[in-house]
Length: 236
Picture 1 (cartoon, rainbow, N blue to C red):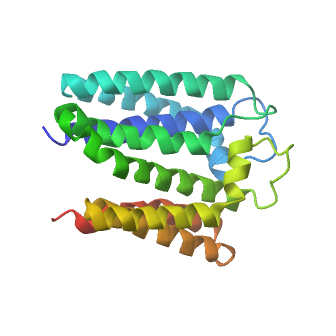
Picture 2 (picture 1 turned 90 degrees about the vertical axis):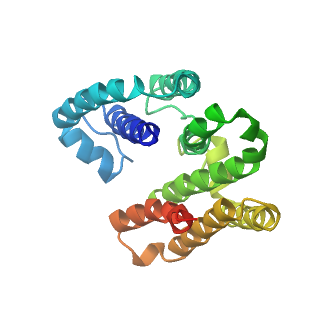
């Protein structure tokens, strides 16, 4: 059933996102610097925990129907992600946190490509360049969100990891490198995925230029929406 892996990943990603927000906002009081989405999750904590429990049951049902080869890779990825989240949240909100924005650029693309490379191992090398490109786009998405939500957060005492601070200070360069890489891959092979990634980067940068004229909630929603550009090539 080709819909099983996407459905399982959708459920799993939502559970991780919700759990991460709840862990960020844990404790009797909300710390300064948390965004509205953290406060929303905190205010509806019991509801989110209930839905996470139901989602876990649905995920178990879906996992039992996933190809065994893909399930093995997903288990390895889930283990690494679990360790990563443990390290992030065990350190506490007041300590310098690990680079969560860049981690998303590693874990999410890996989950996206697992079903294909599990069934067709011969494609692993061929898909590696576009997978790396997609990872860069996902990381740029998260870095832009961080930059928009922390416009003055650039000092060593900001709490952000040094790699996050460096990347936020070079967003234009990172975006340009991704666009060039997309163009090179489009000229060589895999034009659909490469062009989709390049278009997403261009739209993300357009949102960055408009960030002061768009509300925070709409800006964040639009930043995720522009990652749906592969749908333009789906029919082919």
